[in-house]
Amino acid sequence: MQPELITFKHFNDPALAEDLTGVLEQHGIPYEVEEGKFSFDPAFVNSELSKDYAVKIRAVDFELVNRLLNDNERSNIDQADPDHYLFGFSNDELIDVLAKADEWSPFDYQLARKILTERGVEINDQELSNLHKSRIEALKEPEAPQTTWIILGYIFAIAGGLLGIFIGWHLSSFKKTLPDGERVYGYSENDRKQGKRIFYLSIVFFIIGIIFKFSSALSAN
Image 1 (cartoon, rainbow, N blue to C red):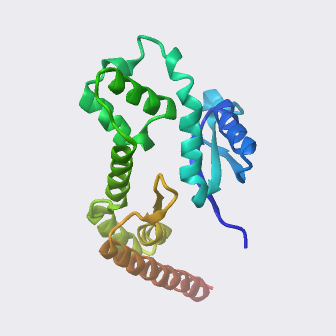
Image 2 (tube, one colour; image 1 turned 45 degrees about the vertical axis):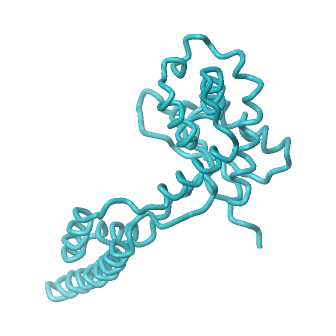
């Protein structure tokens, strides 16, 4: 059985997606590009700008690909524009860029490290590894309690609407992808349990609603 391919990066510019797939092809890394609509905007109907390109790879390749992308940018940072916004960052802000590499481009990551070095702030590989591990642990934490959505879910469930089914399914099954390719549940165990209850309750009331409407139609005839 082939390993599942999961989304590594989203792009709304096909050229950027091609840059990434070029690196993947160069190193023989399996991938696929999933194309979908990015947003509905009448001004961009049939335009490339209205599309979303999701580049998918194996979870085990996430860290390798991140490393390859960073290696590719090391030779480009010497040509960085002197007016680049990172030059105006404080040391703490630059360290935050390194700590949250998933929120920044490989170019920004490498440039932040270079600027820190030029300022006499050395961040060795072990410290970078520790920052990465701390970031992964922070991202593993579930989202804040979804109290509002849980209440709405029960309301829609009892009302017999399909929205209750969707809310329940989302709360119980939603997963997020970490920078290292690991997928973890996005919500707490309690929220997931509530989501399952909403899901099944919605189905029950939805079926009851259909039966009632069908019975009413037969009675009317």
